[in-house]
Length: 120
Image 1 (cartoon, rainbow, N blue to C red):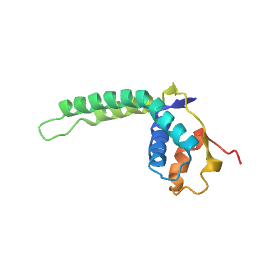
Image 2 (spheres, rainbow, N blue to C red; image 1 turned 30 degrees about the vertical axis):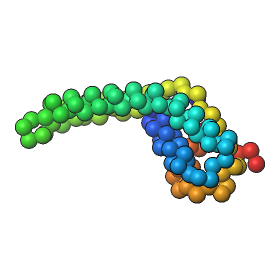
Image 3 (cartoon, rainbow, N blue to C red; image 1 turned 180 degrees about the horizontal axis):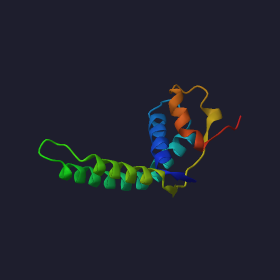
Image 4 (cartoon, rainbow, N blue to C red; image 1 turned 45 degrees about the vertical axis):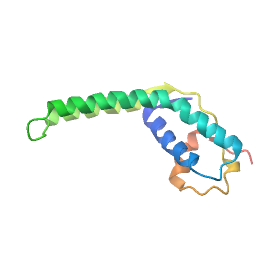
């Protein structure tokens, strides 16, 4: 699957919420675990770079912790570009027809819709 980093982060959040559910069937539990592992390298790389940028921002700050607006805008623009970059990630499909009794918020389902199918 080719998807943006922003979408990878959203899918990961949904998968983590699903992984905490006690009502997932075995096949979906395996797919959730596999997908979380597949997303880890992309998200870990992003988190490392993001942490470096946060350190740079702190280094740019004056004694009162203020950073020039132009510098913040430049960093935000670069961050948005990184979040929009596409990545190829091998994600297993989730079978939504087996999740009819699962108790998770609708936003969680929305986060994983791109990797969902209905086999009912």
